[in-house]
Amino acid sequence: MRALPPLNALRAFEAAARHLNFRLAAEDLGVTQGAVAQQVRGLEARLGVPLFDRMPRGLRLTEDGRRFHAPLKRAFRLIESAVEEISDQHEVTISVTPSFASKWLVPRLSDFTAKHPDIQVKVDAKEKLAVFDSDGVDIAVRHGHPQKAPGLRADPLFSTDLIAVCAPELAKQVLQPSDLLHHVLLNDAHGLWPLYLERVGVQGKSRMMNFNQTSLAIDAAVAGQGVALANEALVASDLASGRLVKALGQALISDPGFYIVAPEKPRQPKLVDLMRQWLFDQI
Image (cartoon, rainbow, N blue to C red; front, side, top):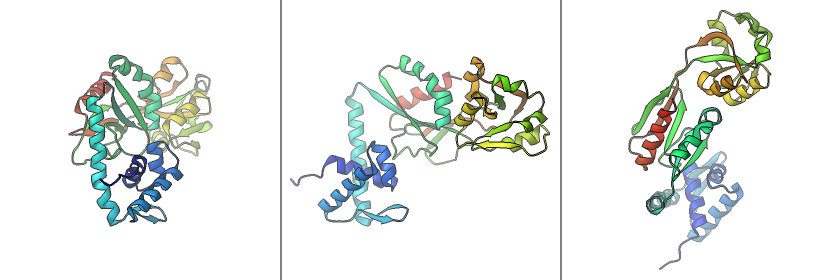
């Protein structure tokens, strides 16, 4: 029987073919980008064919690469299924945004692990949408109206108001909506401050500090750097502890809310059902 290529080389190729990017493949495998590239080059040399076309921005599978990736992908899924079948430890991977992870999910996860000590939870905190059939994600929580896609199920988790919050000392200086113009407004990637100001009848030039993640804007508000506009559920613990207070009574009711998204036929149906029900129980 012909000797098989090293398993690490096969894993590196499969991850690179899935992402079409050595850097993302390296993040997936927990190794360096150079290590993935080197493993792929070694595999190509062993097989005697190029598996990728190296493009200026990423990779493209050659015809040989596409033919090789399809059965290899199925083989790794079979190996994963076999391990899950025989192992006493089961793992469920949940994909969420970094802000949802730090401000809502992670503080509650100890409840899940206490109720299900035999199940390991892997939190995949990225802005990138889950693919499910190729990235190992079992279930996801996303903000906004879910995109309709065949084979996916989306369930509303919760929808709450967007409220203006700040540190307690700063709140003493924000007594009415027009006072917002005298303070820094902490703006996240959703960029809803202009809409909020319009709703509360405030006109004029405001000072903005911009963040690419809601959690960073919330942390800046806790530090007293300005007023943040945030989903009430994400600041519930900060409000309860007194680290933040509502700056104004007016809320912006335009938040589409959070949804649980998972395949209609997940690869681990029992674990997905357990995680989905636990998420609902937290509301």
